[in-house]
Length: 58
Length: 461
Image (cartoon, rainbow over all chains, first blue to last red):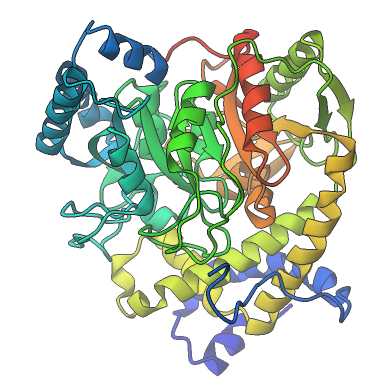
């Protein structure tokens, strides 16, 4: 599991220990389901974000 | 009474738009001290708009089916000269100087705006227990939640105040209150309705749509608000059709899929039996109802949650310097978003593309999917966990479990009432369709509604 206290400190995010304790469990469960999915992604998969260099259909 | 019935009466001079608006304002006066559905009531503006509607009809100018119909909008939609709070202290004193695109469209269609509706703070939650504007109550049972985040929209429509209400849906926020309040709620395809002039929560997940008392009313509102808008970068040029189903619409031969896995796991028994009852009715109406295997919905939900945590925190980060202005549940979500790395956001968007392609295959096998909208009926106000299938679940995660995925996939989805549970509360049925095929889900919903799937009017109505 990730050390959310350390991550918060490294990112310069000021969150109290009490608030961190409250969200850590939720983030741990998200991490547990997300990480295996992320590790399976192959390099041909691009993000589902579209950038258009100019007005679409203008 | 539905929009269509009220519109007929207006044209037959059975009553005037002013009388209709006055009656709606009277219901606000009578019920809203209990329901807390409104943040701002615009009575003066409503009566002026109604007078104008009457004068136009008398002069032979008919703006269409919404002409003179009282509606309301969640407080996420910018309304020129009218305070727009997003249900938060952050925007407590914000008065926009322009209207959201959908407000423009509804008003140009002659609709009469009753006011701005209460909601979950910043649309970031599902209870509508707003710490700044009080908890919205469910008209079916005021000890229960109306759902959210568009809780005021669900309550105002179910209580017979507004004929239609606008909501936003980033992870189920139209369909959840529709399910809990026994109304119809439609989340159109991503890009179908302009987001211009609406507070963002998650840019790539935000959708706009109506809550109404009937399926055809939802179609009427969609007709008014759908279409390309150059001011929204994600707005689609996909052709807009007439979405209102025919009076004798049939679903004979349509292939309706029910995904047994995931969507029928861990349900309240009353919810499951009502939804299965609606499926049986669809079959008697001639639809080909069949089980179907669908892609990994746990993965869809996981990607959706991660993207929302990141986008919502990015949208609201400038305001986090003053932490005291947020309710504890919203603050906890915003804090979570601050601890997720950018790489995970990108990975989630990559996963989204993969899942979208996998899900597209479903539409070669069926025309739409039928599922429950929420695994339970409305929880009590303040309830934080729910027990399903022998497992204790967080109410927010349980309530969004069956709806969130359609925001990630951008698919059109509609919730309609399909029965009352033994506790007397409504059960919602979700119909999901292929991208930009709102017409098919409205047709299925209308056929079911015509075929007797539904609930009696809310006791407060």
